[in-house]
Image (cartoon, rainbow, N blue to C red; front, side, top):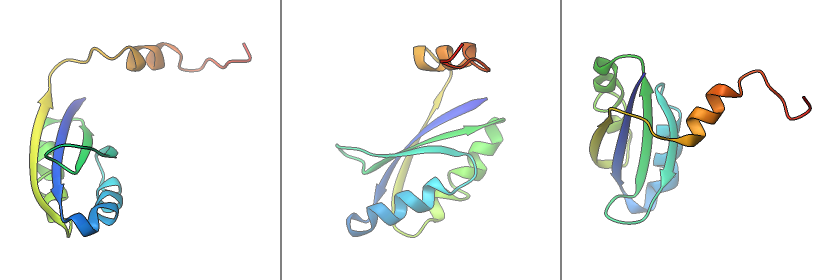
Length: 95
């Protein structure tokens, strides 16, 4: 699994619509509105590195209202949340 963190600058008056459109793109798992230099952050999770090129410049950058993107590729995950979720598959709180 390849994870890319995509920072997005959007037209200010279209941020909610841009976020919703990006959230519908295959390969995008989450979209957050954020503070700072960028308006949105999208988490892209795909099987292969070449798919990042299909998702980011191929789809996200073509969403109306996207002005600029900056993409960072993650090479290792340290999230306790992800590890706990992986080990709890099939378990319920009722057990």
